[in-house]
Amino acid sequence: MSEGKRVVLDANILLRAVFGVRVRGILDAYEGAASIYSPDVCFDDARKYIPTLAAKRNFSPDAALTVMDRLDLIVECVDYTLYKKHETSSRDRISSRYLADWPIMATALLLNCPIWTEDQDFFGSGVATWTTNKVELYLRNV
Image (spheres, rainbow, N blue to C red):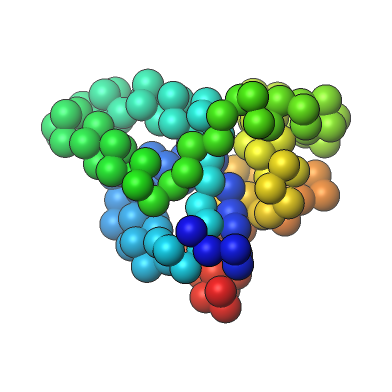
């Protein structure tokens, strides 16, 4: 992957890539041009919710899991052993928000890059955030 632009995805973006078209299209468009990461727990969370979401959408859970597996080729999974050193700082930054999101913040701190999310849990944390409707403004100038 490129040494240029980098971004960390949260679990909801991974799920949108599995079930939607827009996020997957953005990921495909910038594959190789930007470095895209997500902590291991986001991959685990997404896989955990896929069967339920697939059933609600009349979508094959196996097909959804296959799409998720293919995301591993575009989105680099960051292991806990790499981001754990940023846990305290991450928890401090999102203390009044959803604390389970600390690995996403920690990965962004580790890699010194923004977070792509649809949640507001990271706003005001000192790390830039991008939503799907604006992330291409950041990525297009790779």
